[in-house]
Image (tube, rainbow, N blue to C red; front, side, top):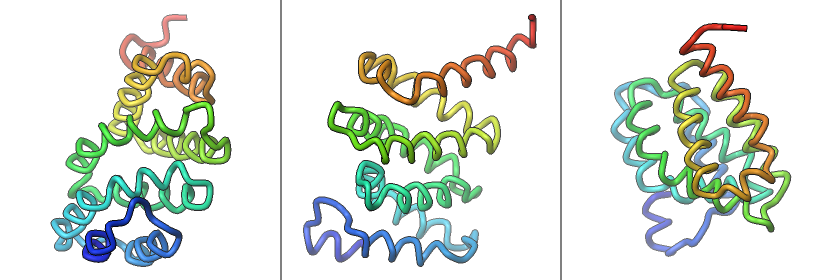
Length: 164
């Protein structure tokens, strides 16, 4: 797929490309394949994140990212490498012409990640916080406001305890 993307000079993925990735990720990921998965992610991440903004591909894209984000041996590298493009993806998704179906999918994806523990909560908090600071008006009109308020409240409780 990586070779084909380069050869065909693709601008974005179609469903068939996403299906190939989903098929490759069907079985549990093996630690001895970590370098190959990391290389694949580096080569294709812009296509996967862009697919989060496509109504026909967003659910597949979030499934792919969820699987890769949870591959423990490369998790920190993938999270770090994806932060800038994740932020750009939010910028695209929450433009005035962004698809509500994709926005709802994004919210479910983010909520699912934050339920998986503190490293994900902190990661998502930083990305959504950066988005809110760089794109205040789109953020304030988005379905991320209540989500971010909940994250911030949980973060305060984590840091200071429940003072009320």
